[in-house]
Structure formats: C-alpha cells, structure tokens
Image 1 (cartoon, rainbow, N blue to C red):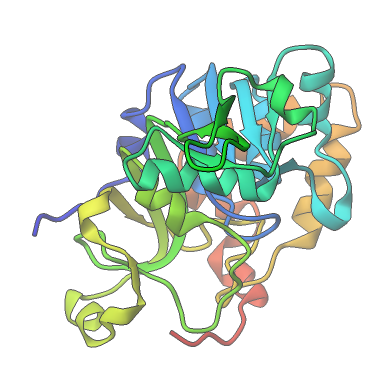
Image 2: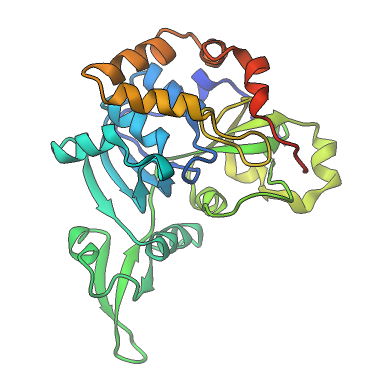
Length: 297
C-alpha cells in the first residue's frame, strides 16, 4: 500500500476552479471546514457543490463568492436558522440552486457508487423539483409495468471532500462504534472519483487491522488523507467534540453587518497561514479541548 498522507495546501491545490465537489457532513456535524478554509485561501471559485444537509461549509463558500451552482437537500444552520450568505447569493442570482428530497439525492449517489448512469425513482413525481432540474431528472417508462418513473442522474463530481474520525497513512478511514448516522458520507465516498479526507487522528496501520469491521472507507477509494485535529470546527465531530456555539453565533452575527462576512474571512482564514493559525484564534487546541466528549472507537 502507498502512503496517502499529505498537507491541506497540497491536497486542495489539486482542485481547480470550476470543479464539481461533493461536501460531506450533516447539519452541524463533520462539515469539512479545514478543507473549505483552504479552498478560500487558495481562491478556488466557480464551484459546483453537491451537499447533504449543509451548514457553515456552504455558507462560508457563498460568502467568499466561490459557488456557481448548488445541488442538495438543505442549506441552513439547523436550530440557528437560515444560511444568510447562501440565501443572499441565491436571491441575487449568483448561485444556481437545484433542490432534491433526501431519497432522491441518495439515489443519485447510489447510482454513481454502482457505476450506473441513473437510478429510477418515484420520489419526485408530482413535485416542482422534477421541472427545476430537467438535465438530471427525466421521466421514463417501466418496461415491465408501463408505470412512469423518474430517472435520477448519477451524482457526478470531480472531487469529494470529507472530514472523518481516524485513518492510517494509507487512507483506511474508520468510523466509531458510537456515532450519529444521518449523513451519506460513506455513500459519497463510494461514488467519488477523487476523494480527499481529513481526519481527527492518524493511527498505526496495526490499529486499523485490529478492528477491520470499522473501516467504512478503504484505502482504494482515498487519494489523500490529512491529520487535522478539530478539522470540523466550529461544527462538531460526533464522538470527539461538540460544536462551538459561540463561534457559530459570531459568524452569523458578522453576516448581519455590511462587510461583516468579508472581515470575518480576512481575520480568521485569509490572514492565518494554516489550520494552526486558525485554531490559535480560538485559544488553540488546548482551549478547544473544552468541547471534547468521551469517545469510543
């Protein structure tokens, strides 16, 4: 096996402007924030994003003017309300949006993971979603029953960016025994063409071998892996640490002020050289350990 270890700048430098990217995470958990910050630092724009229930990752990219098109099931801040920068960009026509139901979006990633060009579904029949995405949703007739189905185009992306739990240097990524499971990160990984994963911790390969059943993303799918403690901050990594409510509220407060998002991005991302510099803004990993939870792998 080949070592896949690299750095955030190196991994993100492989992504060109205009790329189609699947972003992992769900709501306020495991948003791949370290990777998103590096996208902003490297001024990668014109992105076509495919997300599950996205929050801060998409809102920050919207504030940076990095998104051209978005496809997904939800973009907001869960209990904190809407995603203000994303909403403004949608309203002024900067971002083209395509909404899907959860089951329809799952079908698209399953199709890609199975090597199929589409999967049939009845999920969006009778909804406006069918008409808003004619390039990805087309009516077909069942050859057996004559019923009408919708063909949902496979989710085609250039890169998939995920934040995970632990991995070895070869890119075998493990999920813990106790975890939340309302995301489709593993499905996105199976559907990926080029997969970049940040993890909380790199562990020896022997440790991975001791519990092989926890390896939900094998090294064969992974192009690059980066050890990035608190890589989802200020969102949570379930089983490792909770979200930083104060930091989330600070971002949302900045979004209400003229020029606020730009000032925030400058202070916390563009003027910090790397992830360590970003974490230092919040008192470093020592201070962030206050959000840690007891974990079981």
